[in-house]
Length: 380
Image (cartoon, rainbow, N blue to C red; front, top):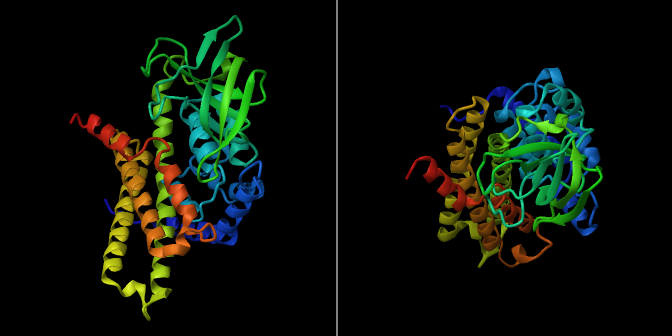
């Protein structure tokens, strides 16, 4: 397998890099954080991203998408990661939208995907619960049968962009008990429905998440995404594919942090010489480069596996996530160390990458979780 991007993907990358650079992302992130912006990102930029076609990369043309794949989306996600762009590609496209694409009915796809692709509908996936850690199937939220459909009760936390999402795909247990993937059903829920309560949270990198409580929320049979009691497999498929996108974003973040650190090594003088000439720092910079390139290879392989529905996708996703989690944290930490005192201040941008590395590393499972998952898949 040749791990290089095509000419078309290179054009997409150039366009995305130009867009991200023009948005002055790090300055904007600082402003969003300091002003405690209620949305946490720019709706105007989100509309522009939709006009550029990025929100429709994964979706078929009949819904308004471009019918491309994860390899192309990874190119865009990497560039968004370089600028730490907080716009809701992960929550709306890779989680909420993908759940509808992979498991939704044709009616759900026709109703939801066109406005989502047009940038007019924000969605997310609400699956994580307090105490569940990384176990997708540790779900206590219940959905009980009623005469007219279903009634949901329970609480989700760390719901990505849950404070702004208009529709949520919610995982609930409809049969059986414990942590089994059987007996789980996904439901489409309107965030404004009676009984839905949303409390905004913020992660260490200032991204918006939410606690969402469902108190006897009524949904109909038409709101079931996929088959009743068979949502565990769909949930796993959606999260695996979203992890591919997250890894691509992490790759962009670590690449930008590495380049920022290299620039500093080439311009900062100590004892009358550039610190980049010190042998010890050369060795550490070389290690950062190696970790970055290994991560790139892992992400590209996982993206191509998602495009071909390779049965080895779960294993390849775990390789990519474990690699990216470790590498992003390493490169961020080394960036702080090599920047010295200025790197410890809030005024310098390197700190934003360290915070994003910490938050992204534990999203969808940290490195230790994915190494263990890989071992279980390989029956070690």
